Length: 151
Image (cartoon, rainbow, N blue to C red; front, side, top):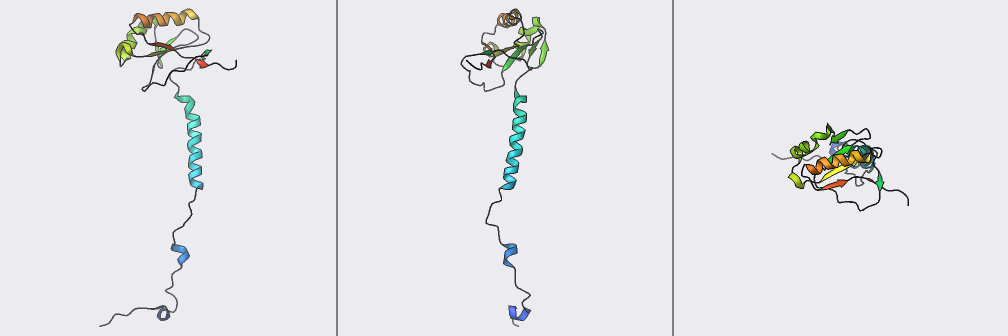
């Protein structure tokens, strides 16, 4: 019993493989990667303005040093131009601000609270909200403003 090996001559040239078909491609096709990156860029450009905390208000402009970003989502109290008060995105009565903050605050009275007052709201309304927060025992209060443009 012997084993036979077919050679090209024995098969009539039909056993030849085409090398171009099965060779790995040595070049990287970057077009799909560029397409994916452009789609991600557009998604982040659209989503970035939506990531702002709370209710949209027209913040006043002021010069000042920017505080570092908190490690967790900040506790924000928003006062809209009509005098409505919100904690995060939840509307709250003025008399209930301190009680709601106590229930929400994870670090107790050491929790930093950001006050976002609309540009058109009366100064006294913002001060009443701030007074209620201080009366509730919270001492770390910061006002949120937009960066002043121009000189």
